[in-house]
Amino acid sequence: MKNCLKIMKIMLCMLLVASFVGCAGTKTRESTGQYIDDSAITTKVKAAIFAEESLKTLQITVVTFKGVVQLSGFVDSAASVTKAGKVARGVEGVKSVKNDLVVK
Image 1 (cartoon, rainbow, N blue to C red):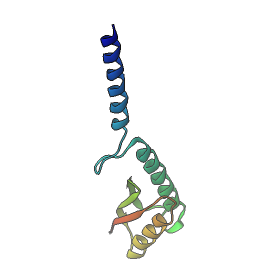
Image 2 (cartoon, rainbow, N blue to C red):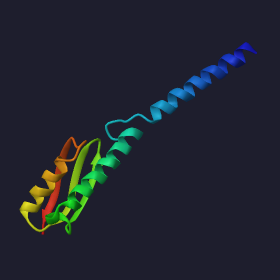
Image 3 (cartoon, helix red, strand yellow):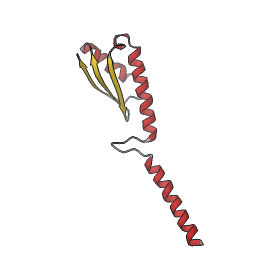
Image 4 (spheres, helix red, strand yellow):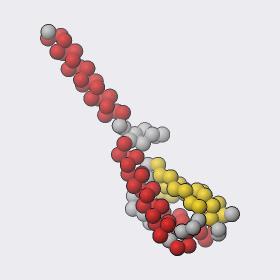
């Protein structure tokens, strides 16, 4: 009976450790908390870009990974590329911006 209880305790500990490790982030994968934070940053950046009159109608895609925002899509001018990057950098939580916007 003691051995069975000991085995069950060990199994429970292993299950708890596995569940915590499953939520941890790596270089190529976000943790659950990072995913939620990045989703919020993406939403804030999209809202900030949409609020900017000169960028409102342009085709800009925003993706965030571990606080790094990537902008991609098409804009009308080089000034719009610069403006979109500046707006994204101004959002709270953004660590850096990778600006891959293309002038069409």
